[in-house]
Every structure is written in C-alpha cells, then in structure tokens.
Image (tube, rainbow, N blue to C red; front, side, top):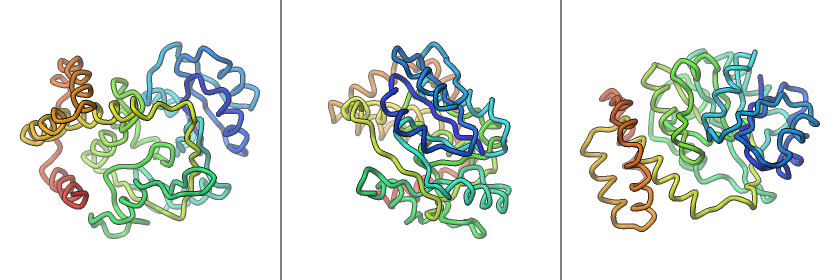
Amino acid sequence: MTVVVVTRNREADLRISLPRHTGRPVIVVDNGSADATAEVATAHGACVVALGRNAGAAGRNVGVELAQTPYVAFADDDSWWAPDALGRAAQILDAHPRLGVLAARVLVGPGHRLDPVCTAMAASPLHAPGLPGPPVLGFVACGAVVRREAFLQVGGFREPYGIGGEEELLALDLVAAGWQLAYVDRVVAHHHPSPSRDPARRRVVQRRNATYTRVLRRPLPVVARGVARDLRHPEGRAALAEAARRLPWLVRERRRVPASLEAQVRLLEAQDT
C-alpha cells in the first residue's frame, strides 16, 4: 500500500497530516506550490514529485504511476488514515479481485462528524452480491483506496476537473470497464478541512465538474436538464460559462456509459430527490 497526497501551497497542513502516514511509502505530488510544501514533505520522508503546474486531481495519476504497490490510498494534505485502516483495506482488496475502489468512512473535523457523502453511500440502493459493503458509483477521494491496475486502465482523473467532484467520472469509467466500487465503513479516514479552502469557489467547481461528467458520459436529455437547472442559479451560470470553454475537449472525449450503468445512475438520482 502506497499513500499518494496531492497538494498545493499547504505546507502548514502537511506539517500536521504527514506525521500520521507512518510505516508506509508516501508520495507527495506538488501541484506547483510557491511555499515550502516540497521541503516540508521531504523533511517528513515523503517522495516528492514537483509538477511545476497545477494539475488538480490529475496530479494523483503521477503518484499512482510511480507507486510500486498494487494498492494506493489517496489522502489530501488535510486528511489521514486511521492507524489500522490501510492494513484492513489491503486484506479486503485481496479478497475481492474485481474491487477497483474501496470507499472508506470519512470522519470530518475534531468532532468526527460523518461526511454526508458516506451517509448516502451507506444507503445505496444498488445491488451487487459478494461485495464487502454497499456498491456505489462515487466516493470521497481523500477516503479512497484504489487498485492501481484498475485506476491506470481507465486513465485516472482528468486534468480539466481540478479539485472538487472529480470522483464521479472515474467511478463511471471504472464500472463501465467491469470494475466494482464498494463503501466499507469499517475502513476509516479522517479529514480536517483546511481553513484556506474557498467554499464559494468550490461550489462553482463542483457544479462545473458535474456538467463535465454529464456531457462526457450521460444521454443528451440529461445534459439539457442539467443546463436548465444551472441557468436558474448564479453559481450554476458561472459553472456553465467555465464548462463552455472546454466544449471542444468535452465533444472529443464524449463516450456514453452503457444503458445498464445509466439505469444505475438514475436509480441513485431518484434516491437523492
């Protein structure tokens, strides 16, 4: 098991999180930091890859490629894994050879509040006998352990997504390629969101990335309905404006998911309404 951390200008957060990744190889991918991020990571024994640019979530791809282990646990600069989590995750992945992503229980902040995404995953209406937990079509990146083979097969994260909602496209591509994802609440990650985050900007990015995923993988009527919803909100309009600038890439990379997978996505959407 290798831990891969993607970061940018978060030296203060790394001073807290990196000491908790003990006993395993750690690769820190630096997305063009202007502070002492690389120096702090090196001082804590991590292998540092300085990209010299902000590749967003796609920086994790570099870490996965460099990893020499069959499994990779993602962590953010403001997150870490519980002491027994990764050993347990490796055992589960060993026992389920088609499991591409193990989505862990993510506890947020010093109060250990359950991430709302985990609540939704635990209640998944999807069915797949034999998995170690409910089958899902998404995950929280800082609480995910991936099978390196599966991740690289589908190309990992896409650079235009940046950070925020980048997981959905990868989840769809993995399932379309025959891999499985499961939420396993007995594997635990801790996330203490950095105070330097910009919530308003993050909401726009998440809306934009949801648009990316709809255009790249969903039927055109679903795309149209998503556009209509976003046009009714200022943040949605900002997200659409950003997505429009990527239209040539979106058209070039568009590949609809199989009908059986689209049916699963719609079942999850019906649960959320």
